[in-house]
Length: 449
Image 1 (spheres, rainbow, N blue to C red):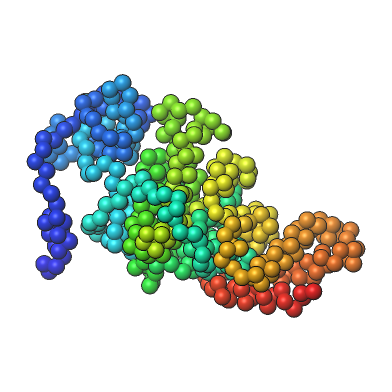
Image 2: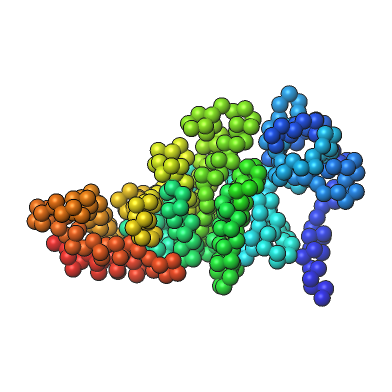
């Protein structure tokens, strides 16, 4: 029975006694979730607790807020929840260590929110490690190059757009095309020591379904989920994305191979836009302030290989293309900073092809460095056949194409059912990297010229 208190007693033994006088400030203004506090000087990123009564020991429920700036001698904060019950003159006290987030083995097999609090009903957590919220900055030459293939468990990705360990990949599509389903397949079939999943700004139902599917079985012990649904405060959404990335960095520093999955990068940019506009920053491209787009750049750059520890973070980020536009500012920014992108097509999804990967528009920038010459040749042939058929699809369906006019198109028409079958995969199936390459060779070699 006493072993139930081991974690609590260990935390109490390791805790440092703080005998410094407690500082507090006072709320003097609240405008659309932006608080102004006087009498409290704390750094940006610090967490604070706002109590309604004059005595913090009255047992009243407190509100959490994060410092996002300062102006004219006042500290600017944003609540991590609703402004209900907030009143003028409420006392604000700093808590925790500014700029540090809890990480560690305790989060494996658990689902937590943006503050690191459990949401799975499995009891309290006792993390004993901290990691900088902004990451540990490393030089460009401290990142080892991508040299090994990463097995996603998805045949089309393994064979045609092969990923590498330490690569950053974006999955780009409009709403309802299957981004989350494809991520679900990768999370189920990825070959990694640790899987960290950040569900940022998504539907609460989707969070519940994901936890139910993946936090069971043998993979549960190596999976950590950080979930901040869409109805949460924008700074809490960004904090959840930073917590997921910090968690991955912590395990990479131990030399482990980490798969970081974030759904979605666009919701992080939306949260950054809300905060930037609230602070008075002018909107630029489609209303996105420069700081909002810089937020996703900083997050993506933290993934990759570590030459010091030998660990790696393979990052997979979904990017929502508003209005199915590939020229959306977030899509364009993500494409320019990522090492590859997978484009999902609404037309293919409407035909019943899942995952709806547009092979001709998708690209892995490291594939030539991690695959053999024969594999690259077969992948190029596959791409050429798919592109030839799609470019002439209307002519073929109308019967306006005469067989024999284009040998490449003739071959594409003859092989089209087999090509589509190769790209299609059921959600529960896992096709390894080796199996994918063998099946690609089997498909292409018999008809090779």
